[in-house]
Length: 565
Image (cartoon, rainbow, N blue to C red; front, side, top):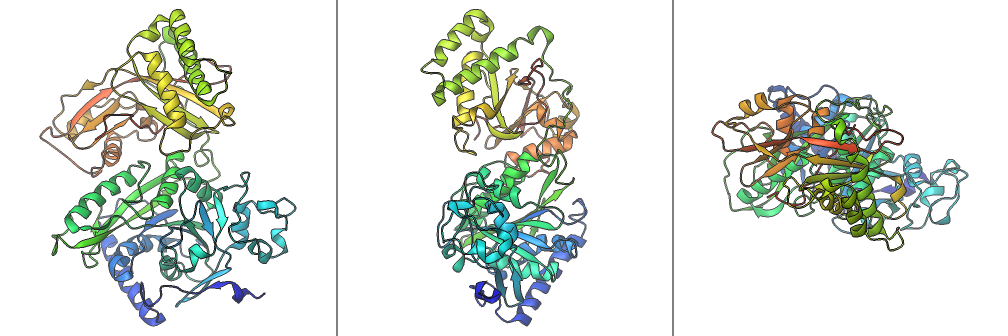
């Protein structure tokens, strides 16, 4: 078998982009020049320096989405000579799969040439290693040649112990799929010769499953992650813009999960957001610009107003570009999810008189989870709560809480409420089960995982309305490190726990990210009180073997069980 026997030929050249190499180079050059002119205008001068570690780019025909994609690729051009591998993850438009599919090719071909696949990197993430039992019982060594791995049967899945268990080998889903292919000519142009790729199609998979694939292939400065996704499909232009602006805000706010009816590449997008949420502080995701297929290639930059619509009732497809910068080496503690934040974060340490509450609350949460998993031999969490209330009457007092579960330092579930509506003991017990079993971002916790879980309880004070009329007044009034914040304009609502100050210590950044989480522009300003604001504080208790429960050390993303509109 020769190298060329495994080349995957271009499937959409001549339809999504020119099949003539000169015409293709000329089109890409025009679109990159347009993007560079936007970047040179100073409108995006606030972007970090250096090449992005990851980008989210659209995948429609170049005449429709090429200029939007070019905005990210013009920034990626900064990595020419350094970036030598692109991990490209798109959705499955034609052949559905469960998991994240590799193909058994050794290269992809476009009119600009043949780009080799990093088969050794694929095999490593698949868990197919020299001298070890491979997936589905295969045991050949990778270093015997790439064909040893690629000759595994179609639909072979990685083992549960692999670095990325959601991976599988599936050729049919790649045969005619365009989402990965259309990114390759741009990458060939901006990164030059010597590039390798890892093409992946993400089908039905959780954010954690896709995130684990990205983590397994993350690499260092030599690797870029390319997420391929359009936004809404075939709504009237005016309505599409409204939907897309909301989705853009959610992506910028790392608000999982994005639904496939809002972004056809939701599964790969959610995987990248899962990584960004885990590595808060080390990764900086920025929205760059957007358009629709009805905008004739005109891109609206972040924080700018969209242009007038020539045909507002025409059905369109939405596009947006994002870039993610990595602020530290992926081998350091922040990038790998290790605990690096000072334990004595100001404003959230439990009152010494309340120190005994932490073990009691965490014990209740664990009892509720054990009962749900059938680990207590029929013992009732209700009985455990009644016994605890008898010993600790304060559990029967009204209270609101968030319960956060982590596993090996990674978020595993987080659910809570902002408004008090039941006793604190019951609130914690219910949210513990919700966080373990009903957080939509994750598969339910299993009995085998239970010993690996760490539990954190945040007990909230009653939200206090803030008499602020403007964003500037809000930012002046906030108490960094102490205040949790709720914002609402009647249609959008979101909150940040006080722990988020650890990663966003500047009030302007704190408010901007919360606005984005709520689906509003991060730069949105107001002066007439149209945004209602409330603040609250938390007492946070986290398990720590051999130590008194203490303030949470790492900010945890939160999701309300109710009240978000």
